[in-house]
Length: 324
Image 1 (cartoon, rainbow, N blue to C red):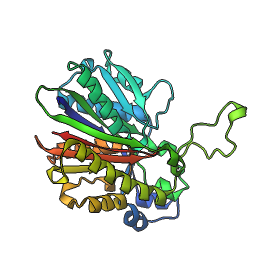
Image 2 (tube, one colour):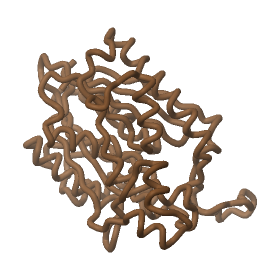
Image 3 (cartoon, helix red, strand yellow):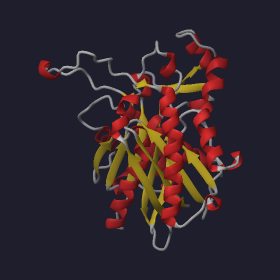
């Protein structure tokens, strides 16, 4: 009890790439993409826009919404797999740009599930020190890690960032709990290699480059089942049922996964938040962007029970319950 989200924020790059734009690059069409993914457009980074820049912009909006100064933040956790530097971390660059001199900062990589993992870590810090305020961010520059000649992947992803400031409030239910899981045995169904090794003894001769590689049909099968089980798992942990959930915010992977998951959970459309049409799959940024939009549009009100879930490469997946 006591860990609450004090404010949320999000940021999308200015450049928009439509399905018609992609049809000039690969053998596809607006209809082909929309009917298979539900995506119409996505935001793509431009000049001077990296994952850290998106994260900083989203963080500033979250801090403003929370009424918290950057100097009050004690921890910055950034979930990303597309940092443009391996060292320093994106979180350290965000700390610099915000002027959050009292915070320690680090990144985590759990692919599309990163924000859920980071939020769970943030809760642990707050529970250990009630005076602490934690900035949790999901940010991705997915366009920098795509093979733009591969229509199976380049049509799916977009860039963006979302953030949340969390802290402690006495007697508030807030963050209830998470069911987080992973299965490294299935890594080769969805992966992205690091740069080629400079050590010739361990160089991978079959290195496909630092782009996302995905077996879409196989990922679909695992994703729906895994998220469904995680949802039921976290509800059982808290002694709750889906009837108590006011709004379900799933990872915005593609519309087929969203629709199949909602059908298996027997949730009506009005209780499922979907924004994939204009943003595509923004990986670790997907959940916090959707959460921020839901808050700002009035879809989430005080005392509402919110259920979020995600699935990503690794495989990683999980579900989280929040009493607003």
